[in-house]
Image 1: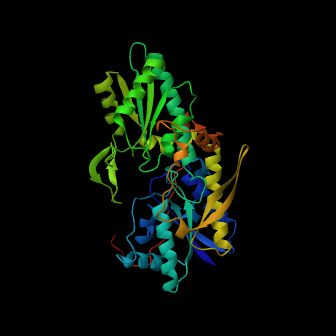
Image 2 (image 1 turned 45 degrees about the vertical axis):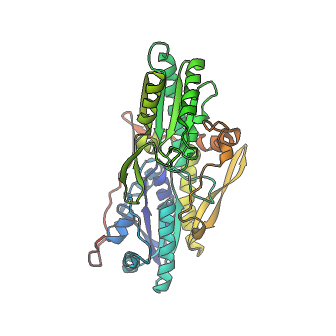
Image 3 (image 1 turned 180 degrees about the vertical axis):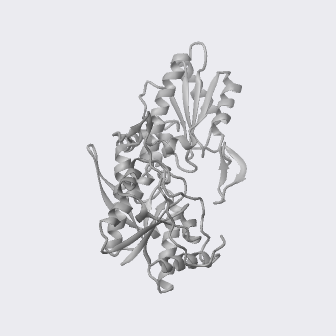
Length: 414
């Protein structure tokens, strides 16, 4: 009998808790093979500091409610573990904690960095003589993990951005004759424009200009496109990815600071774009940054996204019970129309630190829209509704009790 450890990593999503639900509920179906599922308080930091949440103390009803609750039910973190060569002590600490709590299964729910950590833990555990079956559960709103057709979290973000683009465009259209003619919506996506592309899912009668990280920002060409839309439609909506760059590689939104991962701190592409339009074309504007709203919007989640998030958590446990290691369950698309999919898998060495960008054949020739191929890919991912239950007019989300397991090791500084 071995226990399991589950942790959430990086930016959370509307459906990451559905994966947590899939992991925990599936583990509970196999009490003869998996004992307690511990969850890291605030992600992998919970393992390093031995702050382990005993999920066996959570009721079945509360675990089930995770499926319709957004964000990280056990807490996540942006903490990139250094390389084995730079700080082997951190990885050794993980193994020590796992060993102290009889943990033989490691389920890490995150993006490319967490896949890398998962792989390293698996490799080091063997050399230390305490094997850990490390399974990566994919998650990222950026949709940039390889192998899997799409990433849990993305479908719901895409749905939110498509709906927001449509609704804001209706608003601008109604006011354009005497007031605002420009609306700029900034969305997440540092290197990959998947989220921005979702703005192109609206009807062709709505004039939308999309700015992708994959396409260098051409100010003159952009302003001409916006001006043409305003003169033709009376208004224009712009969806700009936070990762949009000038031709010299600088981000439009770069603030000159960096986060804990060493990434440039972004935020503010929308006002940059809006002011360019105002100064060059004179049009009145409004802008908004979707920020946390886009990834926390469980009330508007895609049904397929919820189902896939849960299925991948479930598959991770089943793969572990089958003896698999250093793998990631993945979504394999089997048909576009009707949309069908199945569970496959990939090796972590083929996932870790690899970003899947938007294919250029998904971006229109002028660089400001999406193609039919992109629409065919995106459309099934936003379809279907899976509304949470409501109480007194608000979604009825669950908060975990987070009862901690007793510590058995000395403190560890991170």
